Figure: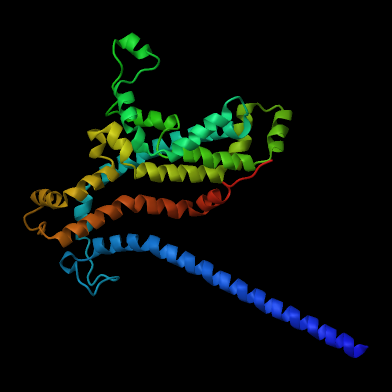
Length: 340
């Protein structure tokens, strides 16, 4: 009897041992697969940024050497200095950050209010309105470009402006036109921000808000003092996404702000310089001392200065990510489906 029990126990232990080994093996393979994917994605993201920085910091006479794929044979800040002057970097950076900051704040405020309405207030036609929001995410912005241009070229509100002034307002070339789009949820990726925050609101227990109403808090007080602090990570995510996309946007700013922004917004400056880098360096040569030598005819040097320009443009976004990466990732994780 004892022998049979021992045999049975040994058999069970062997099965458990095989199962444990199989489970550990599968976990190890899964871990290796996940880290492989993460390393590959990280390599694809970081490599272009590093190559841009490397080309900008390489000594101009050493550009194009085949033996310097990853480490520059000699370093110099000449390309960055020329890029700094070509972009008029302090002036362009100040305008770009301030303009983008205003747009991001307006978009975040609009998205926060609209998303809470869709998440909590049920009224006739709310599903249709939310379907329009989703539709605005899908439809390419270029398809409504002409309509937007005409609307701001002859801007009017139910005919009131024409009644008072005798003609509609022309908002083309004004920063107000871009701010108005951002404040009304029609800015860059506006529908996406509403969707992200709506999902975050739906994850909150309704009982928290009901308890606030019982304690005497009104709708606005509940929203600003209870709901918004609970979704602060998602608000930060939306703010960062709005800042990044508005900072790099060229479509709306070039369409509505026109030439006024071309000499100030860094994303537009980079786009313009990219097509005329040779003449930009040549113009810069006339402003530099006679002892400063610039080979503006070399395509390699033009590429090096252009890389330095590109890195200077994206540098504020890299710094921003280093400061907000933890909260940003938390906000992305919490913007899934759920709720009571």
